[in-house]
Image 1 (cartoon, rainbow, N blue to C red):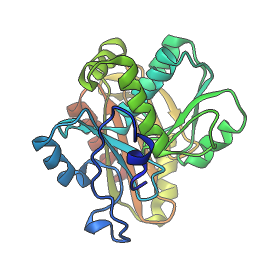
Image 2 (tube, rainbow, N blue to C red):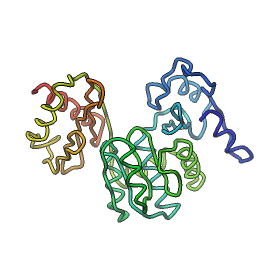
Image 3 (tube, rainbow, N blue to C red):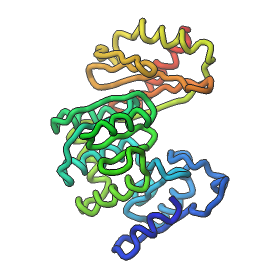
Length: 280
């Protein structure tokens, strides 16, 4: 994606500053994954030289991440919800919304509010692609920052996602902070957290069976509403909080995901998830 935004936005009123764009197989010693821990250099630059938005892509530019103009981290879940609202409110788009299991439940509330069909898939963009190929899709997305668009290739595209975020800012004429505050006010706060922990591959099956067959009665004091076990195991509470355990397909790594109304509660759920692993 190096240089793409410069070229695509040439001749517009948008001023582009590009960093970390050198063609380097080692990416300058920085991991190319668009997640917060890799943003340090860019955050320091933005603190000194504010912009309206910082778009971040990975090595092959199929995923998008971001920061606001002063270097504050934007989660992929926030970007997804901003884009979903933009497509519904500004572009007047309709269709099915496709999301992976590990994506924020704010999407569920938005779809319910706007009367849109929501399809939830396993983790991996190939599952979202399969739904996109069936047609009548508004957007498809996953927690890692992969977003697919209608009328385009049935794949994730970080460049197009970035352009759509810029289109959103142009249409709204409001700062990101105002748009995000509006989402939280309308659909409630949603705070996400995740940890990756070592867990033996040979015990993975037993853990998933335990999670499926012996779910907790409550999450954060709210009764359990649903247990989804078609890709890992996901617990969903009546208040919208959720906890999910899912193993890597190739490594002895267990990923634990959670979402709640605030970060403190999200981390309580992660602690609960770790406790579950210790019972097997």
